Image 1: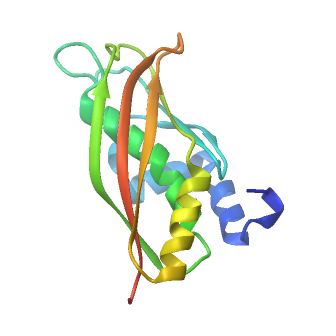
Image 2: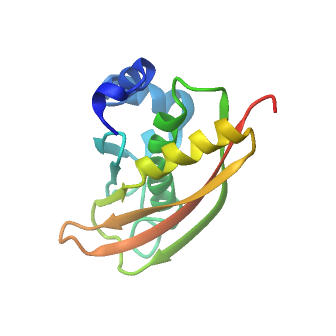
Length: 166
């Protein structure tokens, strides 16, 4: 998706989410657990999103790795950012997580970066929901990697989109 073709609300949302104090306010207002876990936005455009979750006392489990729920929360945020951009400035569309599946490959004992590269696909899914006036679903993958680039966790999140009032 080319930058010039973006709706002005998408451009504003991108700018706001990339502004640290506005992102913290968003967390405080909508997703306080991400603020507590110190999740950080690493990269965001209309095609991909990357967020990191640090290995801290407040994110770890008794086995000295990042708690699975904290990892799932960061992964969901990486997919949800793309979903937010896909609905911004368009019809009144609701979005909801309808399924979640995780696979864990390595111990998450350091900062993990979760990346989702399905911005174009989610945009197409939202377009289909708007055009057909029927609910649409997409399963998005967020892959968590450690500093060595090794896959630590894969999280598949199914999002449902429906035009409100139909």
